[in-house]
Structure formats: structure tokens, C-alpha cells
Image (cartoon, rainbow, N blue to C red; front, side, top):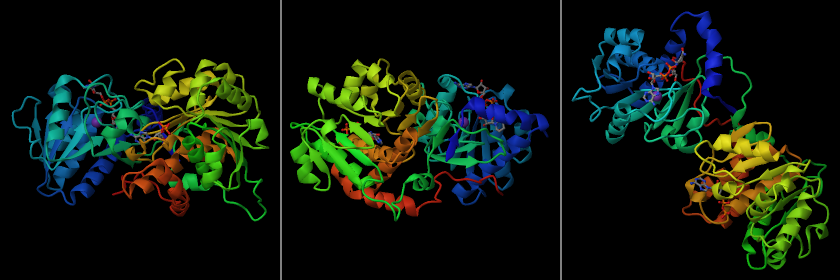
Amino acid sequence: MIGLYTAAEIRAAEEPLLAAGPEGALMQRAATGLATVCLRMLGSAYGRRITLLVGAGNNGGDALVAGAHLAARGARVTAVLLDPGRAHPAGLRALRRAGGRVLDPTAEDNGLDRADLVLDGIVGIGGSGGLRPRAAALAEQAARGPGLLVAVDVPSGVDADTGAVHGTAFEAGTTVTFGAVKPGLVVGEGKGFANEVRLVDIGLDLPPARTHQLTDADVALRLPFPLPGDDKYSQGVVGVAAGSSVYPGAAVLCTGAALRTRPGLVRYAGTAADGVRAAWPEAIVTDGRPADAGRVQAWVVGPGMGTDDAAERVLTEVLASDLPVLVDADALTLAARRPGLVRDRSAPTVLTPHDREFARFGNEVGSDRLGAARGLAADLGAVLLLKGEATVVADPSGTAYVNGTGTPWLATAGTGDVLSGIVGSLLATGMDAAEAAAVGAHVHGRTGQLAAARGPLVAGDLLRRLPDAIRRIQQAAGFVPIGLGDSAP
Ligand SMILES: NC(=O)C1=CN([C@@H]2O[C@H](COP(=O)(O)OP(=O)(O)OC[C@H]3O[C@@H](n4cnc5c(N)ncnc54)[C@H](O)[C@@H]3O)[C@@H](O)[C@H]2O)[C@@H](O)CC1
Ligand SMILES: Nc1ncnc2c1ncn2[C@@H]1O[C@H](COP(=O)(O)OP(=O)(O)O)[C@@H](O)[C@H]1O
Ligand SMILES: [K+]
């Protein structure tokens, strides 16, 4: 698992290393790793034009020291100092010694229109609020130029903890981050500014993370294989209460996804019974109530079910069980009206809202998606899976996951019903509810990527590609999407 750490957590882990000295050692490690990544991106340094955008803090210091390494290898390095009187003194000396040029921010020709690479050292984890006007103007000018755009630690203008961006931010193609990945690089608006994230190990001794991102290897370990002694019941039976005679599609997609994820046994109960029977002869189907379906180990309730009195009775019945329940779509609308139905449960509940469904519980998601998910999870005593470009999962204790897979092609009707079926089927195996949600989101995203490789996708394509996506995840065990070890020479 990749641990995601806030600025405060990073600073706390840096403290003992800074106290133990020697002075500047951490910055040297960070800057060496940063320069190594830049060298790899450029192929070679000699004669290359590099512009450093340098703020007044240590983030600017990192850029200056990395710039000195690159200048020493023959790059033509120009540093634009946002606050010339306060630039990191040792970094500035190092750059000058290596032959770098230094400009103030009002210089007419700052080289951004012809740089091969731009290093953004305006502000890192010490940033607060939106970028100040001069910094914002330089970030925008860099984005218009031809150079590779590399952010130092965090793209300036992105909140490292939340991913919030107020106004503008540096549009990095690559972000070289130090010590640990920050949540703001992989969630919310920040994800789109950080893009490819490279982690440089600077030797921090970090405590266990509160926020995680799963890799294929993590997910492969958690996807249960059927064992020789298994039968169709022992792997966990999923119950699906979804769809309606008017909207059978959601029930068909949800049941199909549960079958394709963990094809032990899926039971369906609801008024879309005919449609489900026709699409999935493998499922055991009743047009009665959940109680008529037979025994299950977890329920999925809500997609396409409607919000009338009959639907509310189904939801109430399912939530009254002592089984794990995934609540989605129409059932979320109903649960938002009667949150006590969720709060009063002792068995695990997983809620899977998108932003509009989330808002029905009383607060907008806002720009801190992790914070919002954690808040509602704690309030309801449930696992919250907040869908989006980077789906977030939080449990009531504050443990959270940010999903790292997926594609915007998933923004199409019915893909959420597929996610519910996948997670429901993992819940039925007895997996911890937050892990089931996080593993399900990862599998769903990989399936979307696989389907999108063939062109525009519809939700049904996900069902066809799910087995292959699971097989590939299992094969790729050991693959880590974020580059580690770049501080090595
Ligand atoms: N503590 C350490 O020894 C280490 C720190 N490191 C680097 O140091 C950074 C943190 O350094 P600092 O604590 O000095 O803080 P930063 O350098 O991240 O930010 C502080 C500077 O940014 C300016 N600033 C803040 N908000 C701004 C905004 N909205 N618009 C424009 N300017 C803004 C402040 O005026 C100040 O000059 C990390 O991100 C990392 O790059 C690394 O070198 C590793 C070791
Ligand atoms: N821009 C996006 N990038 C990546 N994934 C997205 C994007 N927009 C939506 N998704 C994903 O697509 C799915 C849509 O679910 P949902 O909104 O519930 O659709 P429906 O209710 O039609 O099934 C979610 O898994 C969500 O995370
Ligand atoms: K930066």
C-alpha cells in the first residue's frame, strides 16, 4: 500500500532528522533525487535550458540545489526568484557556484518561452491559500511555454493535504515528491495538476498511514481465490435488491457485476425479476421481497429501485438485517431522509454516493473530498465511498483510501451499478467493509481502463471485461504505479 501523508505528518517525521543534522542533509537528498528525475526526463543535461521558479522557502531551496546539480552537468540554468531578498541562501550560493544565472521576477526575458524544462519551486507543503498574483502569472506563463513541467514536492497552488486549488496552480506533467506522497497529489483538483507522481525517499521514519492508495499487488492479495474445499455457498452469497419493472437495467448490471466478480451464488429479489432472469440464468431470482430470496451473506440495495413506499420498505427490511449492506443510488436518497436507519445498525454499511447524492445528507462535498467522506462516515457510523475522478473511501475511524485506477470514460450511465455489484460481492466474502469498497473501486477502475482501450465504453462492456481485469491485476502483482527510489544516484 502507498501511504499518503499530510504536510503536518511529514513535518513531524522530518523533525528528528533535522535535529540530528547535519544541516541541509535532507534538502541534499531531496534535490539529488529531483535532479536525477530531471536528468532521466531530459536524457542529458548538457546545453539544455532549465528555468527554476524559486519561492522564498525550502521548496525554492530544493529547486536551487537541484538546479546547481544540473548546471554542474552542463545545463544552462536560470533561476527566477520571486522574492530575491529571501531566496534560500545556501541554494543560491550553490547555483551561482555552478554557473547558474539569477533573475528577479520582473525580468523581461525569463526564458520560459524556450525552456526545455521548468522546475516549480515556488511553494511546497508550506503553502497557504491561492497563489499570489506574481506566482500565478509565472505558473501560467510556464504552462504556455514548450518546456517539460516538473513540480518540486507539490505543484504550487495545490493544497498538499486536500488537493484543493484556489485560482490557478502549476500544471505539472511530473511531480517529484519527497518522503511520502501527499493526498493532494492524488485526489480532487490537485490530481489533475500533479499528474505523474514520482516519490523520492529521503529517509523519513513515518508512522502507520491513515490514508492509503492500493496497488495492483495489494488488490491481488485481497482478491480471494476459490479453494479446493469451496462450494457455491462457502464463498459468500450476495443478495441484490435493485431495479424495477420500469428500470430493469440497473438490476441486470448490478447482478451481473456480482456474478462476474465472485461467481459463487447471487440471489436477486425485486420487480425487475424477468429482466434479470433473462440476462443471468446463473442467478437465483424472485420477484418477491428480500426475505423471499433465501440466505445471503451481504446485500446490495438501491440501484434503479425507485424512491416510493415499496422501495422504502425494501430498504428498511434489508437494513434491519445483521448483514453487511451496500446502499446505492435510490436507496441513498431514501437513507438521506432517514439517516437513523444507517446510524442504528451494528453490521457494516457501505454508502456509495456521487457528489449530488452526498449533498442529500446535508453538506456539499466541497474541495476537501477526503475530509468530506471522513466526516459523513463518522457521522453515520458507516463506510463512505465517494465516487469521482479519484474515488475516496473512508471508514468511521478515519482510515481512508484514495483510488488510483479509472478513466473519465467511466462517466457514463450504469457504471455505478456495476461498482455496487463488485463491492457487494466482496462484502459477501466477509472482507472488511472499507477494504471491500477500496478493492472494488480499484477493480472497477482497472476494468474501465481495459474497456476504454477499445474505444468509448458502456456499462455492459465492464461486465464483459471484469474477468480479464481481475486476471491482469493478479498477474501484475508486484507492479507499483509510483516510481520509488529515485534518490539513488
Ligand atoms: N524541512 C526540510 O528540511 C525539508 C523541506 N523540504 C522542502 O521544503 C518545503 C517546505 O518548505 P517551507 O516550510 O520553507 O515552505 P515552502 O517553501 O513550501 O513555502 C513557504 C514559502 O512560500 C510562500 N508562500 C506561501 N503560500 C504562498 C502562496 N499562496 N503564494 C505564493 N507564495 C506562497 C511563503 O511566503 C514562503 O516564502 C517542502 O515542500 C520541500 O520542498 C525538502 O527540502 C526536504 C527537507
Ligand atoms: N471523470 C471521471 N473520471 C473517472 N471516473 C469517473 C468520472 N466520472 C465518473 N466516474 C466513475 O463512474 C462511476 C459513475 O457512477 P454513478 O455516477 O453512480 O453512475 P450511475 O448511477 O449511472 O451508475 C463511478 O464509479 C465514478 O467514480
Ligand atoms: K512546488
